[in-house]
Length: 425
Image (cartoon, rainbow, N blue to C red; front, side, top):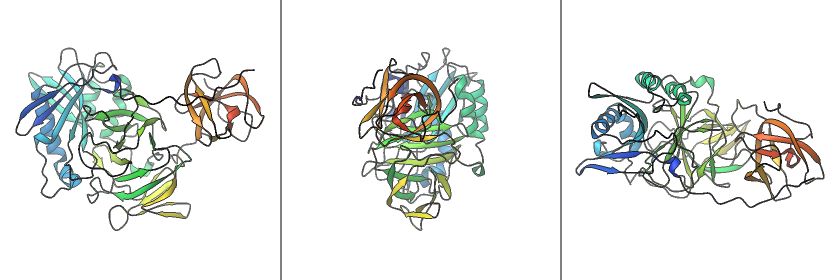
């Protein structure tokens, strides 16, 4: 009988080329066009090509026209009015004939403002020498997403992106966990707007715990301000809602449009400012959007807690089953999404770590570790190598977790030696 190796987790690598974009164009208000090349995207192989100045101009103008009022409110600086020089337009994928481009646009944040940037994915199609551009959240965007060639918008992305134009109603529930390990407690600086005082109050700052920022719900991953080492990340979810994760570092190396599982690692809390702004104290600036519209978190249930805003920014409280935590404050345990019926259990190894494997047995590669006390979610199970756990228990059940990795059930306290989830197909 073999026994598991309790390895130290390998250090996280910086962002790889898979997380880069093909090119970016910054429209300078007084200095003209500044072009900066970022690492070529490795996913997909056809993701090459820059953003022509003509296309960048159309995207910039459309973003300012459609989101101008929100930008002024969000950025909050006295008298601030965004201009084309504040807009960064980045190409993610370009068709071989260069008539289609999929990318992202973002308005840089003034250095005086603690804000999460206003962003928009876009699709551009050149017809008869003129660019037709649509931004995420609009019906026209959904139409272009569905029409674009697969080298520009992959088949697995189409409906998720199109859904931003018709997001699920709030009454359907958000299906969001808090952006850290389930069962772990973090603190919050309180409910606020993207610039603190701006409306709506669609943002919450979180910090503490192990600092590992995780996906609040499964979704497609996109980055903005990618010339920076650690860009702004956001997830577009299958219900048309999006969540933003600002200030993070040591990010996942997954590429643009990659599928991210609920609870999958995104990055580490930090003070990164790839799109500008300001930050004090390592944290994640977590934001909520419905399509192209910021939505207040007031009365929304996330991670088992219902959050309420206070009479001023950076206040409010979180409530669960009659228990109330005033904000700023700590002790907010992530209980997962309310509609999540995936079984969860606690890792046990007398204070040590337990290996995660690429398959249900010790002959498979070690692809990570979890620590004693971590809470994991079990998607399905399989029979494999029998191991002996920390309390002398012998078990040949292996649990597949939400991130696709496997752990011996001998080191997971499920209350039984039998499988607690269906067999993996």
